[in-house]
Length: 425
Image (cartoon, rainbow, N blue to C red; front, side, top):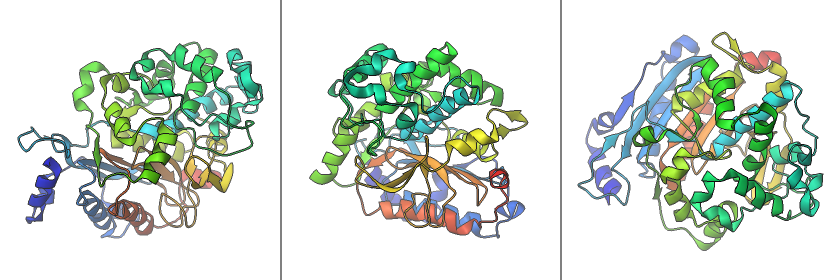
């Protein structure tokens, strides 16, 4: 009821401005955009918000390394459909923390690529070389490359994963996956691994570098670059800063619910409920719980867009970024998604037509997160983008507005090929 009643007030002139906050931004004209481009992009964001699907949204766009949009709209708490009219509303700000969900996969993947950069592993090494317990049921054929490209053959999440308390026992999770029989021989078919792949990659990184993956991310990337958050989970003392997720939109149709259950192992509504559980928010889910601001997510993509260097600090070699974003599948049907998806070793790639990043985004790379979070870079436009949302619709005609927001960014930012990564390709 809360969000519905709130949206009735947004017809007033200036009402959207009252629920919008922004941080420091550079003018679009200073980075080669015409005078109306930023306004057009933000208008598309406002129209997306007005669908009522997202109690809170945050958008950060960098162009040529400069922040041209860093804004939040709506409420991080108190304005979800299940909230009462008397619930206290907490405004969303550019400092509001959001869960990246599956967009976390590309962060974990880059830690694997960092190990490769240092000569600690090869992508075609069998997983059992690093996790000997994984050799059962024919999984001795599974390679690190298979896991990174969603071809490992273990896309289904064991039923036991529905127990949120399992997050606190990663050794039990690894045992469950080691005992699992692959659905097919590793490498043969493409099927999105929503959570399982992360729990295979994380212990490999941990065993190679000798410390927990949360510490690896902090020591190797976050601390050198001065990130405040953007790690697996959040400290318990900061739980109140995280936007509360809410199921929004119409009831889920049986076909869609079956697809979601196949990917998540639980019903859609239950997945949303789990996403707000403190154990999920403070634990480590390598494929699903990096928590940070939209600005930090965009800044991470800027690091990759720059070829691995940011603010004078080099983290990755340019060749590492090229290898990580090299296409491994092209419009092949993903058996989990039921649709064609372009993947690299860790990223969802753009395309000319069927792309989540808009039309003519062949060079774009990034990842979506549950359900409508988009974090990506497009070297041909020299942009790094993060759209964070707290609404979790399964299906709604209003999603067309979300797609149009991505398309507006692609349309209003010209492809000029001036990005650092483009010059290195």
